[in-house]
Amino acid sequence: MEFSAINLAVLPDSQLDTLANLNRAAGIQYADSLVNELELAMAGCTIDDAATPVAAGFEQIHALKNMVIPTGSEALLEACAKLKASAGSMAHGAELRASFLAIAQAAQRVIVAYRSRLVVERPV
Image (tube, rainbow, N blue to C red):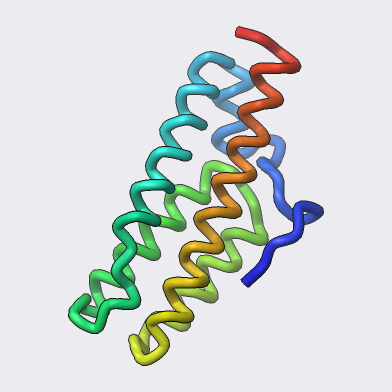
């Protein structure tokens, strides 16, 4: 699963954008927290492990979606929905993991780029 930079961005009026517009410092802190949470989610991803119960795989995907929601990115949210639909069968664990990591990494890139603009364009 690949994401083009063209269709990925923190959308205006998304949770992250709204917070950053109300309080830049809080928006930057929130962005940092999301990036850290995404890093932890990737490191702890076990959806490709046969010993991981299907319910735990769904929980990991749901948590990933919750980290993507603040960006408002429709492409990433759609990818999360597709991943969840595919997760019923753990037979393709390596593919699920690859998709999970691709979504998380794309979300990180989007958030880091947005955060950089907050710091450069509108210093705290």
